[in-house]
Image (cartoon, rainbow, N blue to C red; front, side, top):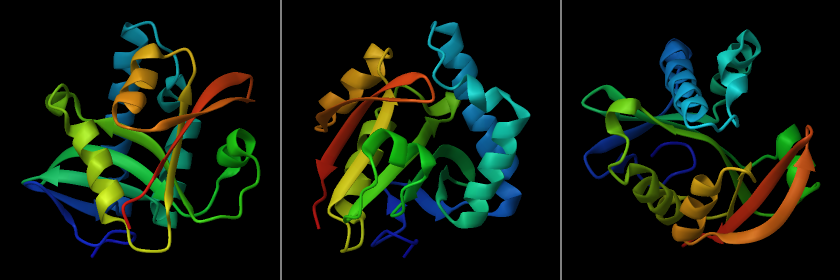
Length: 178
């Protein structure tokens, strides 16, 4: 069992909490995703190209909210999942005291993109969360139409817009299968 999950496998992949020595791997996946988005004209993850992001990622790993999905020890996906709101969550969702999980930084390694792994992982998270949390919440920048459509196609309900850090965010949530 891995933290919030009933099992630690997803198809042929293994899900585990990232450890301190995984920081460069996680940062590398996030930076590559940021550069890929910039090349598409989308600037939602420019932050991950900064040194400040490195510190934030290391803190999240230390807090135990960062996960890695691997395929034969090859990193495939990184994501953050927490039962506690962070500062951005409170700005986007308001202060909530309920049974929600908050998903952030879902990024797929460039060698595994376009294989429906993101959609399948979202389904796996929903089906394998431990009892206690009944809603999965996430946000993304409002001006990324592809990502917004991805979440709608994955069955998430649009919960409105919110402005935080001078950025317009779209909010999405979905009931968990617990």
